[in-house]
Image (tube, rainbow, N blue to C red; front, side, top):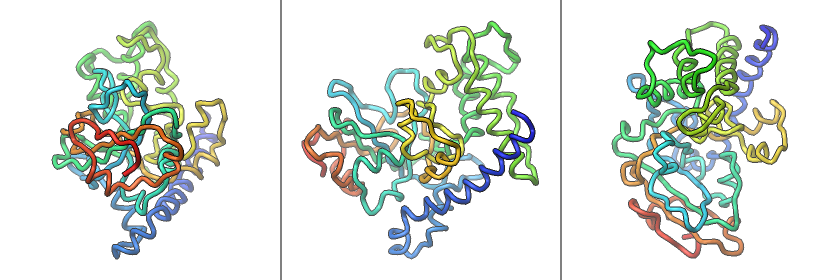
Length: 309
């Protein structure tokens, strides 16, 4: 990317971050008003992190997925010994309750009427268990260094052209630096350039068979083509998986709710309560009440229901 393009991208990102903050606060304006907290402080609360640990201050998350009837759900993410972290969103952005389909689309997914709906609300009592961080490129790089640190060490870098792609991802993450800068567009452009370059890496197969940086990110975290690295989910970005492209302006406009990466621990370890709702007509147009999920859900295996609670 040329310097001029980087500057333009950075400027767009700064503008989008301001715009997205306004969009995000609107989602929870009613809740914020009823609780006495301003929308600005609510948004600030959902993005602020502990300066010592880097973990976000809020500890109340939600996750919605759609799974086949034969698939067990025991962890926040896929229980396949490969995925290290999973995406969650801030529960307070969905109060008052929204329709199931709306919740799914705000986080970039879509509902699937033929599959079981799994909804989990997680309130970890020990933040170090879930290690929740904003899903930004700098935090993804930190996670990669930690999660692939059992396979590679800094002495193995830089990677050679014929090396496994996960080693290349590790070395790229290790080489990322995030120095302070008085020019926000330049700082943001450097972050996006690093994320884009790592996403597009190719190399020899990793232990999972992946040959691209994008595949490594999916293996480890469930990161897909719609991941922006700005800490916001891109609403309706599931369309990208159906070969419906979005412009940068559309992606920025649709970046509404914050997204986080959390350790892929068991439901119990994550302080989660989970329900599993079987398919029925109109299910995904029904309201998903997270207070009821907390009351009805189970922390060991998802409570199976025939209708939304």
